[in-house]
Image 1 (cartoon, rainbow, N blue to C red):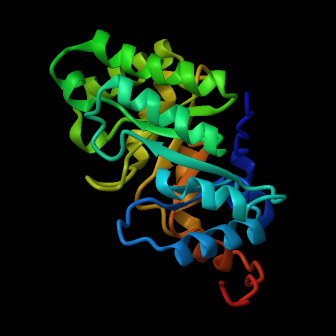
Image 2: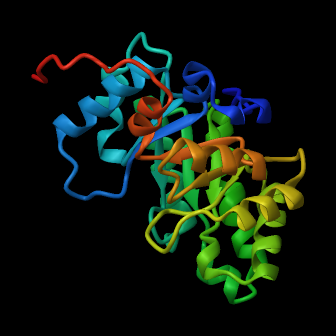
Length: 244
């Protein structure tokens, strides 16, 4: 299975942009108007700065894999995004297809309605079903909890179900219903301990934001502001060669 790196909290001082970059998931999943050129640009930025992954919607996985051939950055994508209210069979099929296309990290949206309905067995089975596909393909599974829609007790339970079902990460939010908060990241870390990792996503736009999330317990940062963060840290600009 692909091994995810953990951001050393000592790097929260942000003195080394190269080290910080390796823990950023460079994301472009919230815009339905995303074009081929946008995806290529995202990949070029990821290759230049050394981001951990690019994150694109499933339809763009093959292109991203092609563009990042030979680069250190990997390709991640979403499953059951953004609502999570898909049949488990559909999520499993989607996961298998994107793995076949070359994705190595999957960010799956939990069945939030089932959780809030008290259907905990369904939630756990849904996650386990996708985790099986991911791990058979050597990929990492992150599960998006959408904390803005949950009570504190539901957040705790969601984390526990993710761990029980074999998720590699718990992740804060899609970005559609609010972003990551320090309180949520800290709570998620306290619940999962060392049994899973934590990804903070949604609203992480600056180097200061990133440092705060890491100090709160995040191991990975999902953001569409990766280039801005790199600029804040003094990284050189990528090539401006035309996209064809």
